[in-house]
Amino acid sequence: MKKVITVRFKQSGKTYYFDPAGIEIAAGDYVIVETARGTECAEVVQGVKEIPDSQIVKELKSVVRLADSVDIRRMNQNRADEKKAFDICVDRIARHKLEMKLVDVEYTLDRTKILFYFTADGRIDFRELVKDLAGVFHTRIELRQIGVRDESKMMGGLGICGQPFCCSRFLKDFQPVSIKMAKEQGLSLNPAKISGSCGRLMCCLAYEQKAYEYLNSITPPVGSTVATPDGNGVVVETNPVSGTLKVRGEGSSLAPRFYKREECRYLYGGKRAPKNLTAQQEPAKEKTEAKEEEK
Image (tube, rainbow, N blue to C red; front, side):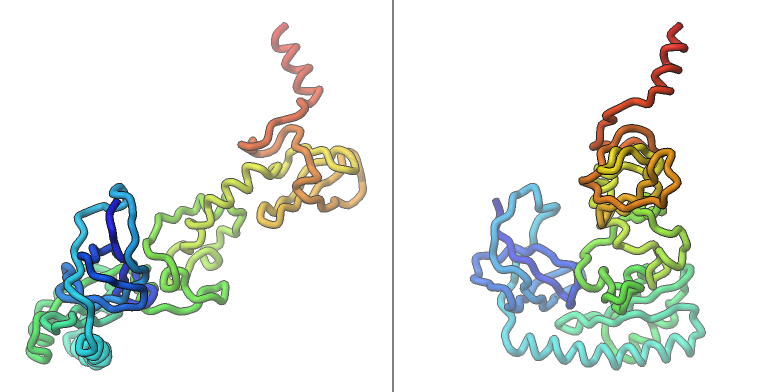
């Protein structure tokens, strides 16, 4: 077991583990840490706790010290200066006629380096831009190209569901998303309906996939025959989330009826075999054909 604290450098940003180095640290405190980008001031999300060694991917860096009022004031000043630096960089990009979009600007706590995050369709020759910016800010300049999903995470906004972006609200890491997930969740394959504001498939398809896999495994599929309180019928529509089935009675001219999943017993058939359901009865026709094949 290893004692760690959990910190983040930006609101709703990715969290990281650091070694508290014997310092008493509580959630809400600010600490000074050394990162690959330089000295940073980070907010403590969770205080000292113990985790298994297996959860630690690489060697932990230690907290340098607790942040004091000077550090916090400097951090706030950096945030204000980052807005000014953003405007200056946008102007310089326009002067150099570069096909790139500036997304965010970050100062390190000691102001020895300033990072500019941007998106672009291809590779950009920004050497002249770096020289220009270095002449303005008189510090080390680093331009870092990011993807459109990272841009959405940094900028934030509202999704088509009306809620703030998942990536900027609580998702810490991006997961691979495939069109197969949309199919298994019964969604329209219209790109406009299953894509986020970043133009990529919505992240919620990935983290909701396991729930849909389980619900589909206990739900009789479309085309299967089920036993209902009103007799046997064929499933014509399912809603795994609400747990309802639309069933048309066999040989009946009546309109299909809705049943709860618990009211129906899977018998056989369907476009796919549900993993957690066992066929209770085989159709007589199939049994007859099987016997004829044996003869």
